[in-house]
Amino acid sequence: MQGVIGAFRELDAAVGAIEALKKDRLGAVRVYTPTPRHELEEAIAVGRPSPVRMFTLIGGLLGVTFGYWIAIWVSDYWPLVVGGKPIASWVPYTIFGFEVMVLIGGLSTVVGLLVNARVPRLTMMVGYDPRFSHGDYGVWVECPPEKVRNAEALLKEHGAVEVRRER
Amino acid sequence: MATLTQPVPARDEPRRPNFASADVQLPAVKDYEQVDREIVGTLHPTVAWFMGLGVAVFFLLVGIATWMYQIYSGLGVAGYNPPVMWGVYIITFVFWIGIGHAGTLISAILYLFRAGFRTTIYRCAEAMTVFAVMTAALFPILHLGRPWKFFWLIPYPNWRYIWPQFKSPLVWDVFAILTYFTISSTFLFIGLIPDSFDFAMALTPGWHTTIFPPYFVAGAIFSGMGMVFTIIIPLRKWFGLKHYVTINHLDAAAKLCLFTSLVVGCAYMTEWFVAWFSGNEVEKSFFANRIWGQWWWASAILYTCNMVLPLTLFSQRLRRSPTWLFILSFTVNIGMWFERFVIVVPSLSHEFEPWQWTSYRPTWVDYGILCGSFGWFSMWFMLFIKQLPVIAIAEVKEIVPPKLKSPHQHGIDPSGRHFEYEADTPGEYA
Image (cartoon, rainbow over all chains, first blue to last red; front, side):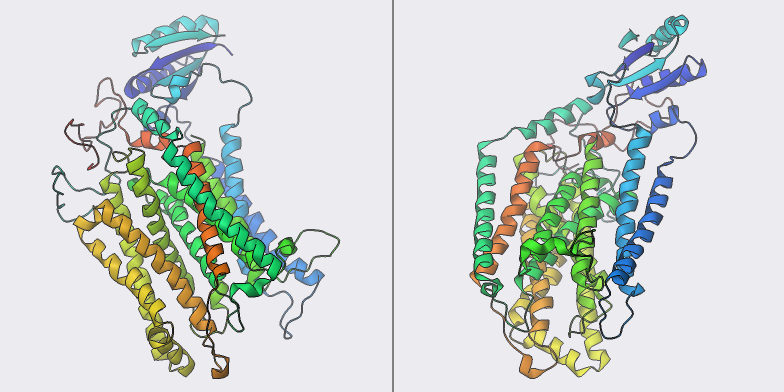
């Protein structure tokens, strides 16, 4: 993976650099930030909503189905007949439907989050520096060798305190 | 959560506009590096922390020893006599489940409403939830005659065949607690990457009411807010984090506490009204017994702690007094424990048939196990506060203004609502 990483002290400088990099089409941009900021999100936005919501929906539907199914199946498998009441009784079994919906829906949201955010990563991120977890912003642009010089100049022009090539 | 009235400045409090709201930022926190330095700095173990952990472990050992005695001698030593077959254990179970509810509210609901005051307290509240659920989960097991067979409640393929009774609240609890524990751990874990129908289904007087689900949820959040104050007020002092968990945050949380107190107060009065309006003699007699009967003192504690004392939070001066909030948090915890006592014991000891009416006296075994539950909860909390930052670092950075090269560019609002740090303010009065 080849490219350039620029370290910025200020948020607006980083946002300006990202916008310029995207405008000049120098390559794919990745941002390291100490905390989520909407300004960065808007600067690198891809424009479509997060797919995590589909994980939640499908997980919740599977969960509610499983919750009802396990209660009904177990009651049918070993009937405990009380007072001639129905063996599979939907009113109390709604409790299981709801609880397992929350459980599977919640867990599949987390799975969706991890899958889409590609965490955990088993390899080191190119360009990452611990200071990007403290107070600085890192803007990484992945570009071929012939564009590296342009990218470096652009990052410096927008106020990067340090610019480094990675290959 | 913004207050409409003007603030009453404390004696040493500089006058500031009064926003106890999401707009409030942290004037004494200048940059992201300061957040890292100060919050990570709380993680070093100290002598006082080891002493606190020791006290918690001592109480846990008291509980374990009592449980061993109970297993050896049988459940009878815990003061259960028919028809009062549920006592301190179910009371304490519901108490701890209730404590956990505030963490869920703060993680999920206040997040959806973008309530800014949650940012600095949510990590503690979520950890509190996980540990409270872990504590609550012990009680149904403690209440089993053969606790080592609790796994029979879980429907998994095995040689005994599968016969849990899905119509039984005991099986509902297995699913409820496991789901609650998994999801609250998930809340805590996700934050860390950067950070009741059980009663109402019975025909017992005082229980058979459709008001119980919302009543329990409001009561649970109320007790949980009490526990949040009990935990966060000493922590912000000991860890020197008063400029993170500011007076405005406490003020906003106190309003939530006051609101849930009014909701449970309304629920109590609705119960009396329903008992009177139903014309049901058993129900009427039961509620008269609740106020004037043998358990009048438990009801008096409940109504004083949950309905009367929280009304003091209408005073802004008291809402902004950490000392008063800390004292009040204890009365809230005591009041909510007694709420469950008043629900469980007077109902079971005063059912339909007068010949069944009886008394109930918890034994030292019940109290030992109650102590053990507080020890277990406190031990986990003490371990937590030195292993993980008690305030979510990344989320606090979200409300600290970023460094800007030239404000007003790129659509960045440099946040005119942010007050410049002044050396003469401790930062506590954001």
